[in-house]
Length: 441
Ligand code: SF4
Image (cartoon, rainbow, N blue to C red; front, side, top):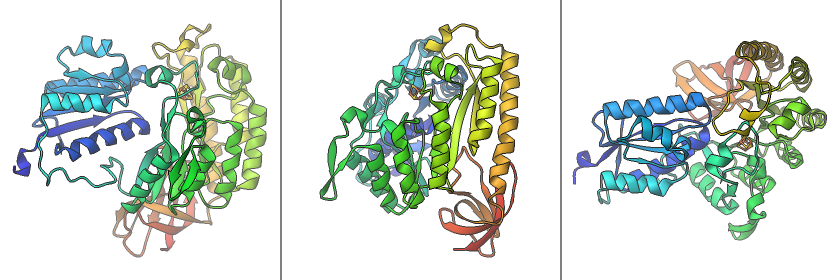
């Protein structure tokens, strides 16, 4: 059959990098079965909306995406985090074809098959072995597990996604190998809690290249480090064994970058959040990490206005930030998530106080970030190119994760190529970005 007759699916992917990985898996399967992707809802045979249900604002965004798909197309399949609680969707859009929760790839595919049966054509069934990436070809997210064993009181992810389920290490390494063979230069390791990797499997061994590898955080980092590409660890919970990977960072095996969502620094707030509360020790650990690996970049997220947060607790957080000198910070005003235990805590913080605390934290952090970036002026940094033009481009240093961190703006005497890694001389810095010129290829 002519390629033009292949059924077309329009896909909307909302939410975090973990949801993006789910979307990629569904799309890979659909492409393997001969479905085509449509650029617009209008004219597609159906629409799949992969939703995010983490915060109420994300739910609103998901509902409005479903609404658009219903209005522009009418045949809509909903999946993802918000699909784990279908009542709200059913009520707003009774005509939706099917609603499933996160990672229910099979159910999504079944629903697609029911609505528009697949074509079987060897020419259409061809799909690149590394799957379809929604991320640019030079970097890719590598999801190592689903779910989470922690029970932070502000979070409903364990309720939505269940307890931790890790992929055996050999499985992850096979996927990483395919990606690297297909040209990926940077692997971003994601999960809800990357440092807990393998706990559920009791660190079971699996077979990789004629030897046994253990499903364990340190082994994961070490083995990925052997592929010779950038490896970035994201969403690491501050367990003591995280100290072990700093040596791999100092040796250049994995990027000297850790994304650890600390969420707060005051022990009482952390206790109410049900997060580990040894923040003094954390400061000492950060110092020793930096001694061992001076180039280490730390990214973190914090929540201000958590129920019961006092002026003193907040002031302590600001002081802690000054001491810890976290390089990159994302800050959220606490938002009650339906079903989260934190909603029942006493003394919610008023909206205007949340806003003023958010402003204060961001202003403080901007100074820290600017100070830390300024140290890079005059240095040489490796930069991976994300956007290329005839006389320069934009990329990221080892300190910058895509989409959430800053960029390096570069001038260049020869045209740059997306995905190549160049050496850049840094001439200038502002609060978030670096500026410089290419000094070597
Ligand atoms: S670590 Fe806490 S915030 Fe992160 S997914 Fe698990 S329960 Fe939620």
